[in-house]
Image (cartoon, rainbow, N blue to C red; front, top):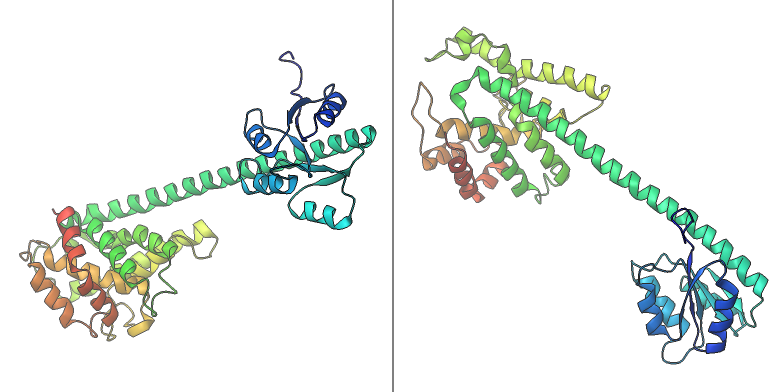
Length: 365
């Protein structure tokens, strides 16, 4: 065969009678590449050998391993399960035919073999296999393409979020690794609460991934706060504090506008970012801002960030305060249980204090 000639389909003939193998090979050899096997074990070995058969003509009545057993093993192996099997047999009972088809065979030809019928069925089944192979290849290509494009979208999401988070960080450069620490605190809390009845419906694996991505945007609204207030080294006046508090609404509004443009008004990957930016200063008892939300009216994402943000602020050095040791910060968190923080979130924090310490050390200033 020259390079220009098409590849000839491979047909494997399995029969324990030598005369039948000779007959079948003589009928098929002008059109197909023929392989033969006189028993089941040899047939299974040949079926795995490159070039693998495009079609198997399989006798049923054979010693040691009958055709049904061979077919069963072919169909159980991912490497050979898509090779069409046509049974050749002297059995003519309908129950025998049904048994073979139920095992996965595509056809059933009774002996004595009619050459025209055999050649027509082999040709037809090879055409069907070619079409099936094409569809499988196309489906595999489409699956790969979907995965690639999904990865591209996720990369765009990651880059977009981190670019926005970096912008916020440049306005408040004393916080350093605060963004990264809170991001990991939130994920640790979410994973710990994933099996809790109050949170299991919300904290799916996909939701936790988005929470992790979104957490760095919790203070994105600070880009709208004047430097004189945002970077003031001393205590803010009441008037300045009211301006500072507007960063929650500023962050929410900017992210909601972006979300509407990206997703046509439907929830997008920025959904949790909007929740966190707006509500992470809300308190469990309703005394927070900007809306004074209370209890379960506060989004879960914001409740997680509330604890993560306060904890990190307590243990971090600022121009106006020294860092607190973990034990003192944890005591303040516990004191805020049921007032500032969701009680179950505080309990989760206490169970994974060691993880918080590890994160703080890994991303220390």
